[in-house]
Image (cartoon, rainbow, N blue to C red; front, side, top):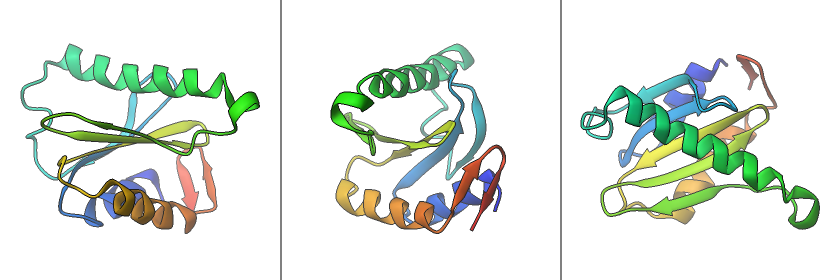
Length: 128
C-alpha cells in the first residue's frame, strides 16, 4: 500500500476527518488527501507551509525526550475550528485535521488499527 492509500483509508474512516497528510522531517507534504478545502482555503501557501513545519518541529522536539519518557504515540490539539492529531510513521509524521466535535479516543483507536495493518512504513511503500 502506498502512502496515498494510507491517507485515503484514514480519511474514509470517519466523515469528520477533513484532511490527512504525511509530512517529512522538514514539514514538507509528501502525500495528502482532503475531504474538502474548508481547512486550507483561507491559508496562503506560506501559512500552509508554516503550519506543517510547526507540526514537524514539534514532532522532532518530542523525540528529544524519548530516552527519558519513551516514544510519543501521538499529539492532539483542539482549536475552536479544527482539531489536529499528529503521529509518527518512522521517517514521516502523519497529520489528521478534523472537526473538533470528533471523539479523539475513537479517532486515535481507528487510525491505530489502520496503521497496525501496515508493517513496513519506510520510504514511499507501506506493506499491508
